[in-house]
Picture 1 (cartoon, rainbow, N blue to C red):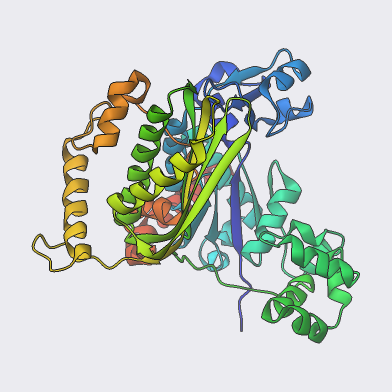
Picture 2 (cartoon, one colour; picture 1 turned 45 degrees about the vertical axis):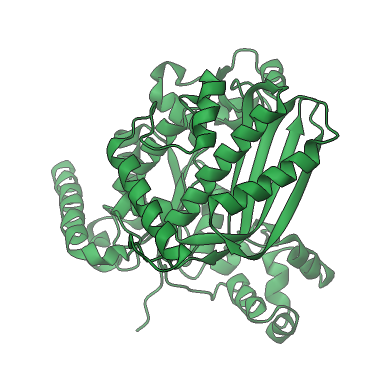
Amino acid sequence: MSRNNRILHVDGDSFFASCEIALNRNLEGRPVWVGGGRRGDGIVIAANRIAKKFGVVTGMACFDAQRLCPKGVLCRPHYDEYRRLSQEMFRVLEQYSPVLVPISIDEGFLDLTTMDSHVWRHTTPLDYVKKIGAHIRDATGLPVSGGLASSSKLAKLVTDAVKPGFYELPAGEEKEFLKDRPVRELSGIAKNRQRSLAALGALTFGDVAKLPSMLLKQKFGIWGQQLWLFANGRWQEPLLLTVKDRTTISSSTTLPYDEHDYEAALTFTLSEATRLVGQLRREQLQARELSLSIRFNDFTETGGSHRFQHAQFQNSVINATLEGLFRDMMSVAFKPVRQIRIAMWNLARLDTQPTLWGKTHEERWGALDAATAELNSDFSRPDKPALMTGAQLALRKIDDAHKQPKSKCPFVPQREMVKKLWGTDADPLAHKGEWTEKLWRVSRGHFTKTSKGG
């Protein structure tokens, strides 16, 4: 007999704002939002539910938020603390399932399919997932919401529908739950597909369920058939942890102050490019295309891009190209620089053999990068890296603000989250024995409390 999938989606509520409240309990019960920009008072990047009731939303200027909610509290972001709290949250989650798939800093999926045989005999699924939420709250101070359903996509829809709180969508009720929900709510659906579905008269999942499955297959291929099964409550999928190569890497940095000196701005650009290329080489990737965008103090922009004939990973090649783009773009510019954005995409695998005496550039650069990474890991301090490029050293000489660079916003790729959790991007089922023992302890503690209370 086939078993119904039970996938739990857990999502942090207003995560950055909730982190600030967890770090400062005096903010509890007050409207709070987190501001971005060079001084932390640019735009709202997160707001808690109390602030949202006053009309404060993500992307709003902080001065507009203060006008709407005069008694609200503006917090500057503390990204390192957000990363720490995120990792603590996922450490709790991994105690409850052998398969944990993080998808962002504040949300992930757990496979609870077999829990009815082992854990839920003396409790209910809803009580169990509420217990997970309470455990996270006790351990980190962060509120979370969750949805339990037959697939990860449906579980996420359930979470979005019931926030704040937890809800289980029982097997067999999927079609009824979906019938009035707009198709645009489905995670990952593109606007072109939305328009194509609208042309067929399908605005809700109920509309999709009424269409012939073969029509959707002819129009959208396999995805169309999957959508039809999903809309009819018949789509089940196992939860799998897959770690894919990134497709792009980028950096967007607002300078500490408007920079009139274009040579200083170029120094920062080359230093930041060196950092990005180092990250690519650590992930064994190289870039075929790159772009550079400059935003001036009046928020006007200029930009340029370049496509290499062959994928590149060497700082000398990439920095020379960036410098050429920069000088071409700035040859007619006269306004101070506010923000610099670099992007590298169309990435390809880089096979480097970390041997000191390799015969190829790839082998030698691989060995150099491995040695550099090890030295920086062993001997660097936040205020003093062990090794720096000429551009990075020059940047610190030019401006004291760069001696302790502020943390970047922690939207890290899934592969990095997985490595931080398990120390490797290998399948965590390799440690299933450890997890089984953890789960036994958690469930045993729950049953003991239940029996004492009963």
